[in-house]
Length: 290
Ligand SMILES: C[S@@+](CC[C@H](N)C(=O)[O-])C[C@H]1O[C@@H](n2cnc3c(N)ncnc32)[C@H](O)[C@@H]1O
Image (cartoon, rainbow, N blue to C red; front, side, top):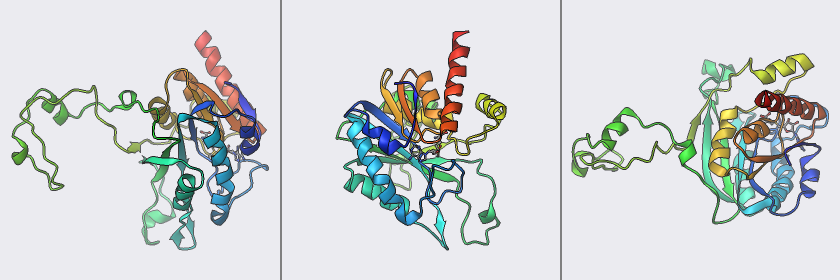
């Protein structure tokens, strides 16, 4: 526990006991990925992706506690002219073949997605500026904490909380037919439900991890932002719980889990990435002990 395991996740997961993990948060290599994760990582085509991934998902199901969740960060791609359906086929297989239940499909919207070939508008579509985060549960009960992920109330909501809104339901009916009684105080929950779109740039280019990469002469090509991991780790686990990332890359899940008082198990196939991740977490631990 709280150490990086260097190896193939399908093999390494088999060594873990049943029901020892509270939350899986991970981002596997995407289909036909062009990023270089080293010689051990083969390119998986979209038509082979479900077949490649499902045996791993079955292991994740086994190691999760009954109240555990699995959050999958993934994106799709174009094959020829069209957006391939492998992500949607994978979601169906995760539920129908591996036994998970889909709780919510979250969108990670990256407003800082750089312009690319689609941005010219002559390829029949816009650029893609979001990825998916699918939240699956193992059973009918799962850990979910809303309070740590609440957003600050908007100015309007602050008015409603003080009973300073105007009009009853008939006066406040929206085109969607939702209607609100605004002339009474609304209950204050300490912040609003953040909804299912997580808006986060992925622009960090000069943090402690980058400095380590420069010193070591290597880098990781596909880190997700710490804030993304934070959202799911805070809401999907409690302090002292065990968080697993079977494709841990640079170790973002480990770093965030540790900062939030969770235990973690991280598996990564590329030994250089494991070393880098170990250095990163050691550096943070040393800084905290100073
Ligand atoms: C998208 S990256 C994960 C990045 C990570 N979330 C981060 O913030 O750094 C996917 C990682 O999975 C690793 N990987 C690919 N196949 C693997 C396997 N079979 N077992 C374990 N790790 C694997 C790759 O080397 C790569 O580092």
